[in-house]
Image (cartoon, rainbow, N blue to C red; front, side, top):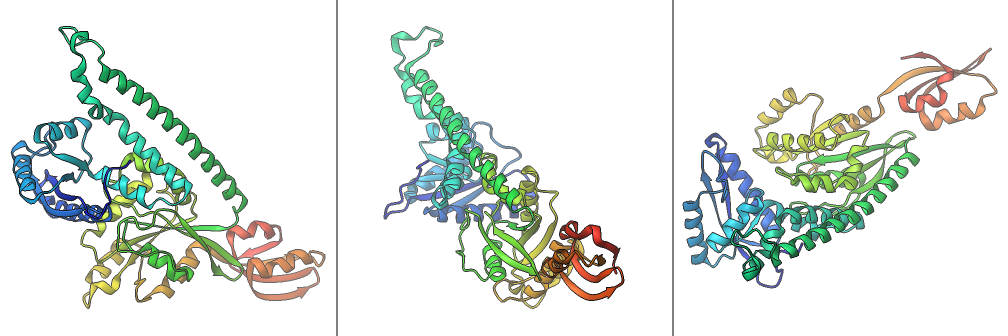
Length: 429
Protein backbone atom coordinates (compact mmCIF):
# COMPACT_ATOMS: atom_id res chain seq x y z
CA UNK A 1 0.00 0.00 0.00
CA UNK A 2 1.83 3.10 -1.20
CA UNK A 3 0.56 6.03 0.79
CA UNK A 4 3.40 8.43 1.15
CA UNK A 5 5.72 10.09 -1.32
CA UNK A 6 9.20 9.64 0.14
CA UNK A 7 10.89 12.21 -2.07
CA UNK A 8 13.23 14.93 -0.79
CA UNK A 9 10.35 16.97 0.61
CA UNK A 10 8.64 15.09 3.40
CA UNK A 11 4.86 15.36 3.82
CA UNK A 12 3.79 17.69 6.64
CA UNK A 13 1.12 16.47 9.04
CA UNK A 14 -0.91 17.34 12.09
CA UNK A 15 -1.86 14.66 14.58
CA UNK A 16 -5.13 14.41 16.48
CA UNK A 17 -6.35 12.20 19.28
CA UNK A 18 -9.61 11.95 21.23
CA UNK A 19 -9.75 11.40 25.00
CA UNK A 20 -13.10 10.18 26.35
CA UNK A 21 -11.85 9.79 29.93
CA UNK A 22 -10.33 12.89 31.53
CA UNK A 23 -8.48 10.70 34.03
CA UNK A 24 -6.60 9.12 31.14
CA UNK A 25 -5.54 12.38 29.48
CA UNK A 26 -1.83 11.83 30.23
CA UNK A 27 -2.03 8.39 28.63
CA UNK A 28 -3.69 9.95 25.56
CA UNK A 29 -0.79 12.40 25.39
CA UNK A 30 1.72 9.53 25.58
CA UNK A 31 -0.17 7.71 22.83
CA UNK A 32 -0.03 10.80 20.63
CA UNK A 33 3.71 11.12 21.32
CA UNK A 34 4.03 7.50 20.17
CA UNK A 35 2.08 8.34 17.00
CA UNK A 36 4.55 11.17 16.40
CA UNK A 37 7.40 8.64 16.52
CA UNK A 38 5.48 6.40 14.13
CA UNK A 39 5.00 9.33 11.74
CA UNK A 40 8.71 10.20 11.91
CA UNK A 41 9.60 6.56 11.18
CA UNK A 42 7.28 6.80 8.17
CA UNK A 43 9.23 9.90 7.06
CA UNK A 44 6.49 12.41 7.82
CA UNK A 45 7.20 15.79 9.43
CA UNK A 46 4.84 16.47 12.33
CA UNK A 47 3.84 20.15 12.48
CA UNK A 48 1.60 20.02 15.56
CA UNK A 49 -0.64 17.70 17.55
CA UNK A 50 -3.95 18.13 19.36
CA UNK A 51 -6.17 16.16 21.72
CA UNK A 52 -9.91 16.73 22.08
CA UNK A 53 -11.67 15.87 25.34
CA UNK A 54 -15.09 14.39 24.60
CA UNK A 55 -17.68 12.29 26.38
CA UNK A 56 -17.95 9.93 23.42
CA UNK A 57 -16.61 9.32 19.91
CA UNK A 58 -18.31 11.26 17.10
CA UNK A 59 -19.88 8.61 14.87
CA UNK A 60 -19.52 10.69 11.69
CA UNK A 61 -16.03 12.22 12.16
CA UNK A 62 -14.56 10.46 15.22
CA UNK A 63 -13.61 13.94 16.59
CA UNK A 64 -16.04 16.86 16.90
CA UNK A 65 -16.96 18.89 13.83
CA UNK A 66 -16.01 22.24 15.38
CA UNK A 67 -12.70 20.83 16.58
CA UNK A 68 -11.90 19.58 13.08
CA UNK A 69 -12.77 22.97 11.57
CA UNK A 70 -10.22 24.59 13.87
CA UNK A 71 -7.60 21.98 12.94
CA UNK A 72 -8.37 22.50 9.24
CA UNK A 73 -7.70 26.26 9.61
CA UNK A 74 -4.37 25.56 11.34
CA UNK A 75 -3.45 23.11 8.59
CA UNK A 76 -4.12 25.76 5.93
CA UNK A 77 -2.03 28.30 7.87
CA UNK A 78 0.97 25.95 8.23
CA UNK A 79 0.69 24.22 4.83
CA UNK A 80 0.17 20.83 6.48
CA UNK A 81 -0.96 18.24 3.93
CA UNK A 82 -2.08 15.35 6.14
CA UNK A 83 -4.25 14.87 9.19
CA UNK A 84 -3.35 11.68 11.07
CA UNK A 85 -5.70 10.19 13.68
CA UNK A 86 -4.40 8.26 16.69
CA UNK A 87 -6.87 5.44 16.12
CA UNK A 88 -8.36 3.41 13.28
CA UNK A 89 -11.04 5.35 11.40
CA UNK A 90 -14.05 3.59 9.99
CA UNK A 91 -14.46 3.85 6.19
CA UNK A 92 -17.41 6.20 6.76
CA UNK A 93 -15.48 8.51 9.10
CA UNK A 94 -12.56 8.69 6.70
CA UNK A 95 -14.87 9.53 3.76
CA UNK A 96 -16.76 12.16 5.73
CA UNK A 97 -13.62 14.00 6.86
CA UNK A 98 -12.10 14.07 3.37
CA UNK A 99 -15.39 15.12 1.76
CA UNK A 100 -16.59 17.72 4.28
CA UNK A 101 -13.26 19.26 5.30
CA UNK A 102 -11.24 18.68 2.13
CA UNK A 103 -8.49 17.12 4.26
CA UNK A 104 -6.25 14.23 3.26
CA UNK A 105 -6.61 11.90 6.23
CA UNK A 106 -4.72 8.85 7.47
CA UNK A 107 -5.15 6.80 10.62
CA UNK A 108 -2.81 5.00 13.01
CA UNK A 109 -3.31 1.68 11.22
CA UNK A 110 -2.27 3.07 7.83
CA UNK A 111 0.92 4.53 9.33
CA UNK A 112 1.80 1.22 11.01
CA UNK A 113 1.13 -0.71 7.81
CA UNK A 114 3.35 1.68 5.87
CA UNK A 115 6.20 1.24 8.38
CA UNK A 116 5.84 -2.53 8.29
CA UNK A 117 5.91 -2.42 4.50
CA UNK A 118 9.16 -0.41 4.59
CA UNK A 119 10.85 -2.71 7.10
CA UNK A 120 9.75 -6.10 5.75
CA UNK A 121 12.79 -7.91 4.37
CA UNK A 122 11.95 -11.62 4.16
CA UNK A 123 9.44 -13.16 1.78
CA UNK A 124 7.43 -14.21 4.80
CA UNK A 125 7.08 -10.74 6.35
CA UNK A 126 6.43 -9.10 2.97
CA UNK A 127 3.54 -11.50 2.38
CA UNK A 128 2.20 -10.84 5.88
CA UNK A 129 2.25 -7.07 5.36
CA UNK A 130 0.56 -7.47 1.99
CA UNK A 131 -2.20 -9.59 3.53
CA UNK A 132 -2.83 -7.01 6.27
CA UNK A 133 -2.95 -4.22 3.68
CA UNK A 134 -5.44 -6.10 1.50
CA UNK A 135 -7.71 -6.76 4.49
CA UNK A 136 -7.53 -3.07 5.42
CA UNK A 137 -8.32 -1.93 1.87
CA UNK A 138 -11.30 -4.23 1.25
CA UNK A 139 -13.99 -2.35 3.23
CA UNK A 140 -12.59 1.01 2.08
CA UNK A 141 -12.93 0.57 -1.68
CA UNK A 142 -16.03 2.73 -1.95
CA UNK A 143 -14.18 5.95 -1.26
CA UNK A 144 -11.76 5.19 -4.08
CA UNK A 145 -14.58 5.00 -6.63
CA UNK A 146 -17.20 7.41 -5.21
CA UNK A 147 -16.55 9.91 -8.01
CA UNK A 148 -18.04 7.41 -10.48
CA UNK A 149 -21.37 7.36 -8.63
CA UNK A 150 -22.18 10.71 -10.25
CA UNK A 151 -21.97 9.09 -13.69
CA UNK A 152 -25.15 7.09 -13.24
CA UNK A 153 -27.16 9.77 -15.09
CA UNK A 154 -30.06 8.55 -17.21
CA UNK A 155 -29.40 4.91 -16.40
CA UNK A 156 -30.41 5.50 -12.79
CA UNK A 157 -34.01 5.34 -11.61
CA UNK A 158 -35.78 8.04 -9.62
CA UNK A 159 -35.05 6.11 -6.44
CA UNK A 160 -31.37 5.77 -7.27
CA UNK A 161 -31.67 2.00 -6.93
CA UNK A 162 -29.88 1.10 -10.17
CA UNK A 163 -26.34 -0.24 -10.31
CA UNK A 164 -24.09 2.54 -11.56
CA UNK A 165 -20.67 2.35 -13.14
CA UNK A 166 -18.99 3.00 -9.80
CA UNK A 167 -20.78 0.12 -8.12
CA UNK A 168 -19.71 -2.24 -10.88
CA UNK A 169 -16.10 -1.16 -10.54
CA UNK A 170 -16.24 -1.69 -6.76
CA UNK A 171 -17.49 -5.26 -7.25
CA UNK A 172 -14.67 -5.93 -9.72
CA UNK A 173 -12.10 -4.54 -7.28
CA UNK A 174 -13.55 -6.55 -4.39
CA UNK A 175 -13.22 -9.75 -6.38
CA UNK A 176 -9.61 -8.90 -7.27
CA UNK A 177 -8.69 -8.14 -3.65
CA UNK A 178 -10.45 -11.26 -2.33
CA UNK A 179 -8.56 -13.38 -4.86
CA UNK A 180 -5.29 -11.71 -3.82
CA UNK A 181 -6.12 -12.42 -0.17
CA UNK A 182 -6.74 -16.08 -1.03
CA UNK A 183 -3.41 -16.39 -2.90
CA UNK A 184 -1.34 -14.66 -0.19
CA UNK A 185 -3.05 -16.69 2.56
CA UNK A 186 -2.22 -19.89 0.66
CA UNK A 187 1.46 -18.85 0.38
CA UNK A 188 1.62 -18.09 4.09
CA UNK A 189 -0.01 -21.41 4.97
CA UNK A 190 2.80 -23.17 3.08
CA UNK A 191 5.37 -21.21 5.11
CA UNK A 192 3.52 -22.15 8.32
CA UNK A 193 3.65 -25.82 7.34
CA UNK A 194 7.40 -25.55 6.72
CA UNK A 195 7.89 -23.92 10.13
CA UNK A 196 5.94 -26.69 11.86
CA UNK A 197 8.10 -29.32 10.09
CA UNK A 198 11.30 -27.48 11.08
CA UNK A 199 10.08 -27.21 14.66
CA UNK A 200 9.51 -30.98 14.85
CA UNK A 201 12.99 -31.67 13.52
CA UNK A 202 14.57 -29.67 16.35
CA UNK A 203 12.02 -30.48 19.04
CA UNK A 204 14.74 -31.30 21.57
CA UNK A 205 16.31 -27.84 21.26
CA UNK A 206 14.80 -25.37 23.72
CA UNK A 207 13.43 -22.19 22.18
CA UNK A 208 13.50 -18.80 23.92
CA UNK A 209 11.76 -15.72 22.49
CA UNK A 210 12.25 -12.10 23.42
CA UNK A 211 8.89 -10.34 23.41
CA UNK A 212 7.89 -6.87 24.53
CA UNK A 213 6.72 -3.43 23.63
CA UNK A 214 8.54 -1.83 20.72
CA UNK A 215 11.70 0.05 21.77
CA UNK A 216 11.89 -1.85 25.07
CA UNK A 217 15.49 -2.80 24.25
CA UNK A 218 14.92 -6.38 23.04
CA UNK A 219 17.50 -6.17 20.26
CA UNK A 220 20.14 -4.70 22.59
CA UNK A 221 19.49 -7.50 25.09
CA UNK A 222 19.61 -10.07 22.28
CA UNK A 223 23.05 -8.76 21.30
CA UNK A 224 24.31 -9.02 24.87
CA UNK A 225 23.05 -12.59 25.31
CA UNK A 226 24.31 -13.87 21.96
CA UNK A 227 27.36 -11.73 21.24
CA UNK A 228 25.73 -10.71 17.96
CA UNK A 229 25.36 -7.24 16.47
CA UNK A 230 21.82 -7.07 15.10
CA UNK A 231 20.32 -3.69 14.19
CA UNK A 232 19.57 -1.42 17.15
CA UNK A 233 17.75 1.80 16.27
CA UNK A 234 15.75 4.34 18.24
CA UNK A 235 12.85 3.77 15.86
CA UNK A 236 9.58 1.95 16.29
CA UNK A 237 9.51 -1.47 14.61
CA UNK A 238 13.23 -1.40 13.77
CA UNK A 239 13.06 -5.21 14.15
CA UNK A 240 10.44 -6.87 11.96
CA UNK A 241 11.84 -10.17 10.72
CA UNK A 242 12.67 -12.64 13.48
CA UNK A 243 16.39 -13.12 14.15
CA UNK A 244 17.47 -16.39 15.83
CA UNK A 245 20.79 -17.55 17.24
CA UNK A 246 22.03 -20.55 19.23
CA UNK A 247 23.29 -19.89 22.77
CA UNK A 248 24.92 -22.07 25.41
CA UNK A 249 22.61 -22.51 28.40
CA UNK A 250 24.54 -25.09 30.40
CA UNK A 251 27.03 -27.88 29.92
CA UNK A 252 25.86 -29.86 26.93
CA UNK A 253 22.72 -27.74 26.76
CA UNK A 254 22.04 -25.26 23.97
CA UNK A 255 18.96 -23.22 23.15
CA UNK A 256 17.77 -21.09 20.26
CA UNK A 257 16.96 -17.50 21.21
CA UNK A 258 14.91 -15.28 18.91
CA UNK A 259 14.43 -11.51 18.73
CA UNK A 260 10.86 -10.85 17.57
CA UNK A 261 8.85 -7.89 16.33
CA UNK A 262 7.93 -5.37 19.01
CA UNK A 263 4.30 -4.92 19.98
CA UNK A 264 2.47 -1.64 20.41
CA UNK A 265 -0.83 -0.42 21.81
CA UNK A 266 -3.76 -0.61 19.41
CA UNK A 267 -1.79 -2.90 17.12
CA UNK A 268 -4.16 -3.52 14.18
CA UNK A 269 -6.02 -6.81 14.53
CA UNK A 270 -5.48 -7.60 10.84
CA UNK A 271 -1.74 -7.18 11.35
CA UNK A 272 -1.70 -9.63 14.26
CA UNK A 273 -3.80 -12.11 12.28
CA UNK A 274 -1.61 -11.72 9.19
CA UNK A 275 1.65 -12.18 11.10
CA UNK A 276 0.85 -15.73 12.22
CA UNK A 277 3.92 -17.13 10.45
CA UNK A 278 6.32 -14.66 12.08
CA UNK A 279 4.60 -14.99 15.46
CA UNK A 280 4.82 -18.79 15.18
CA UNK A 281 8.26 -18.44 16.78
CA UNK A 282 6.56 -16.89 19.80
CA UNK A 283 3.74 -19.43 19.87
CA UNK A 284 6.22 -22.36 19.79
CA UNK A 285 8.62 -20.99 22.40
CA UNK A 286 9.50 -22.92 25.55
CA UNK A 287 10.14 -19.67 27.40
CA UNK A 288 9.28 -16.02 26.77
CA UNK A 289 11.50 -13.22 28.03
CA UNK A 290 9.02 -10.36 28.38
CA UNK A 291 11.25 -7.28 28.10
CA UNK A 292 9.89 -3.97 29.44
CA UNK A 293 11.43 -0.50 29.56
CA UNK A 294 11.15 0.19 33.29
CA UNK A 295 12.04 3.86 32.78
CA UNK A 296 8.87 4.49 30.77
CA UNK A 297 6.09 6.08 32.82
CA UNK A 298 3.51 3.89 31.08
CA UNK A 299 5.45 0.62 31.24
CA UNK A 300 2.58 -1.19 32.99
CA UNK A 301 0.19 -0.20 30.20
CA UNK A 302 2.82 -1.53 27.77
CA UNK A 303 2.94 -4.82 29.68
CA UNK A 304 -0.85 -5.05 29.37
CA UNK A 305 -0.68 -4.36 25.60
CA UNK A 306 1.90 -7.12 25.09
CA UNK A 307 -0.06 -9.58 27.25
CA UNK A 308 -3.17 -8.80 25.19
CA UNK A 309 -1.39 -9.72 21.94
CA UNK A 310 0.10 -12.86 23.52
CA UNK A 311 -3.39 -13.93 24.58
CA UNK A 312 -4.74 -13.23 21.10
CA UNK A 313 -2.18 -15.54 19.46
CA UNK A 314 -2.51 -18.22 22.15
CA UNK A 315 0.92 -17.67 23.70
CA UNK A 316 -0.27 -16.51 27.12
CA UNK A 317 0.25 -19.96 28.70
CA UNK A 318 3.91 -20.21 27.77
CA UNK A 319 6.30 -19.83 30.76
CA UNK A 320 7.19 -16.17 31.06
CA UNK A 321 10.19 -14.45 32.66
CA UNK A 322 9.61 -10.69 33.20
CA UNK A 323 12.77 -8.72 32.36
CA UNK A 324 12.75 -5.04 33.27
CA UNK A 325 15.35 -3.30 31.12
CA UNK A 326 16.98 0.18 31.19
CA UNK A 327 17.45 0.35 34.97
CA UNK A 328 20.38 2.67 34.22
CA UNK A 329 17.83 5.34 33.26
CA UNK A 330 16.16 5.28 36.69
CA UNK A 331 18.94 7.36 38.22
CA UNK A 332 19.77 7.15 41.92
CA UNK A 333 16.24 6.47 43.09
CA UNK A 334 15.14 2.98 42.15
CA UNK A 335 11.84 2.95 44.02
CA UNK A 336 10.09 1.56 40.94
CA UNK A 337 12.45 -1.42 40.92
CA UNK A 338 11.49 -2.24 44.52
CA UNK A 339 7.77 -1.87 43.80
CA UNK A 340 7.92 -4.02 40.66
CA UNK A 341 9.96 -6.76 42.32
CA UNK A 342 7.07 -7.24 44.76
CA UNK A 343 4.37 -6.94 42.09
CA UNK A 344 5.99 -9.08 39.37
CA UNK A 345 7.28 -12.23 41.04
CA UNK A 346 10.41 -13.97 39.73
CA UNK A 347 11.28 -10.91 37.64
CA UNK A 348 14.77 -9.59 36.96
CA UNK A 349 16.08 -6.04 36.47
CA UNK A 350 18.86 -5.37 33.96
CA UNK A 351 20.53 -2.82 31.75
CA UNK A 352 21.40 -4.07 28.29
CA UNK A 353 23.30 -0.80 27.76
CA UNK A 354 25.66 -1.13 30.76
CA UNK A 355 25.51 -4.90 31.28
CA UNK A 356 24.24 -4.53 34.86
CA UNK A 357 22.69 -7.73 36.26
CA UNK A 358 23.08 -9.63 32.98
CA UNK A 359 24.87 -12.48 34.76
CA UNK A 360 21.94 -12.73 37.15
CA UNK A 361 19.57 -12.89 34.16
CA UNK A 362 21.64 -15.69 32.60
CA UNK A 363 21.45 -17.70 35.83
CA UNK A 364 17.68 -17.21 36.02
CA UNK A 365 17.41 -18.13 32.36
CA UNK A 366 19.40 -21.31 32.92
CA UNK A 367 17.26 -22.30 35.90
CA UNK A 368 14.01 -21.52 34.12
CA UNK A 369 14.80 -23.23 30.84
CA UNK A 370 16.42 -26.28 32.36
CA UNK A 371 14.44 -26.94 35.52
CA UNK A 372 17.15 -29.43 36.33
CA UNK A 373 17.21 -31.89 39.20
CA UNK A 374 19.93 -33.87 40.96
CA UNK A 375 19.31 -37.57 40.26
CA UNK A 376 21.03 -40.92 40.83
CA UNK A 377 21.28 -43.60 38.16
CA UNK A 378 22.41 -47.22 38.00
CA UNK A 379 23.75 -48.34 34.62
CA UNK A 380 24.49 -52.01 33.87
CA UNK A 381 28.07 -52.43 32.72
CA UNK A 382 26.93 -53.33 29.21
CA UNK A 383 25.22 -49.94 28.78
CA UNK A 384 28.46 -48.15 27.88
CA UNK A 385 26.76 -45.97 25.26
CA UNK A 386 24.22 -44.67 27.80
CA UNK A 387 26.99 -44.08 30.36
CA UNK A 388 29.00 -42.07 27.82
CA UNK A 389 25.94 -40.01 26.83
CA UNK A 390 25.54 -38.78 30.42
CA UNK A 391 28.54 -36.48 29.95
CA UNK A 392 26.85 -34.70 27.04
CA UNK A 393 23.28 -34.51 28.40
CA UNK A 394 24.01 -33.77 32.07
CA UNK A 395 26.53 -32.53 34.56
CA UNK A 396 27.96 -35.64 36.23
CA UNK A 397 28.61 -35.01 39.93
CA UNK A 398 29.97 -38.42 40.87
CA UNK A 399 30.61 -41.85 39.40
CA UNK A 400 31.26 -45.10 41.29
CA UNK A 401 31.26 -48.79 40.57
CA UNK A 402 29.18 -51.42 42.30
CA UNK A 403 28.56 -55.14 41.88
CA UNK A 404 25.48 -54.29 39.82
CA UNK A 405 26.89 -51.63 37.53
CA UNK A 406 27.94 -47.96 37.38
CA UNK A 407 26.25 -45.57 39.83
CA UNK A 408 26.16 -41.96 38.62
CA UNK A 409 24.85 -38.85 40.36
CA UNK A 410 24.11 -36.04 37.91
CA UNK A 411 22.24 -32.77 37.43
CA UNK A 412 20.03 -33.35 34.42
CA UNK A 413 17.38 -31.48 32.49
CA UNK A 414 14.00 -33.16 32.89
CA UNK A 415 13.53 -33.11 29.11
CA UNK A 416 16.76 -35.09 28.70
CA UNK A 417 15.73 -37.52 31.43
CA UNK A 418 13.55 -39.57 29.10
CA UNK A 419 16.68 -40.88 27.36
CA UNK A 420 17.98 -42.54 30.54
CA UNK A 421 14.90 -42.70 32.77
CA UNK A 422 14.90 -46.50 32.85
CA UNK A 423 18.20 -46.33 34.77
CA UNK A 424 16.91 -43.85 37.38
CA UNK A 425 17.21 -44.88 41.05
CA UNK A 426 16.29 -41.72 42.98
CA UNK A 427 15.56 -38.04 42.40
CA UNK A 428 17.29 -35.28 44.37
CA UNK A 429 20.07 -37.80 44.98
